[in-house]
Image (cartoon, rainbow, N blue to C red; front, side, top):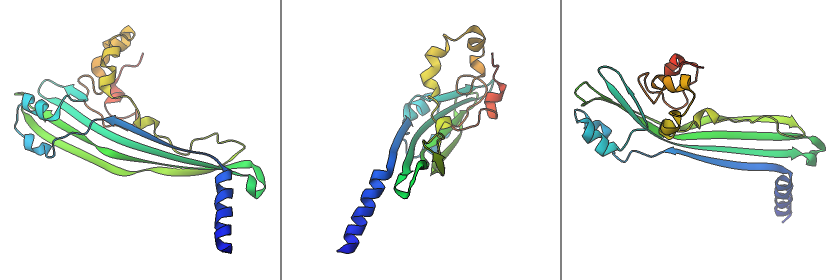
Length: 200
């Protein structure tokens, strides 16, 4: 009976010491319904679009056309606790973790607009975790998923035409919009096709 009271008291103390607990869910894109995209090899552009739906990213060159579909689910957890119960009112303990799951499908079409290559990347893993002891208030996030939360390129296609002239002229050099290639979500801004962009 004593151990139950001890557990109850300990749980209550822990609950009262928590300064904040949050859980964030982010969903981007729509999952491709086709179970075996490899079956589209050699099919026409029209047949591929009918099976996969509209692409979320695309790029073109003189010979090839590349289209990509993506869907992601990101979960971010964070817990903060005050050390006041231990006599350290001025310290907070923060812990956080993040996880990603989803897939990225990329299809290449040849000059005859037939499927010439298909690649699929699936992810279901941890993005990492972190912990910190911070004075008075949690000043620094112990996890960050900001680089994975960029809007899908399709969401920017209309508004991109209304940007300032230097940026509008450079739209064809942006990943997911024109002829520089297709980036997978989470690619650092300093590498890949984005390095060719003309910044104004």
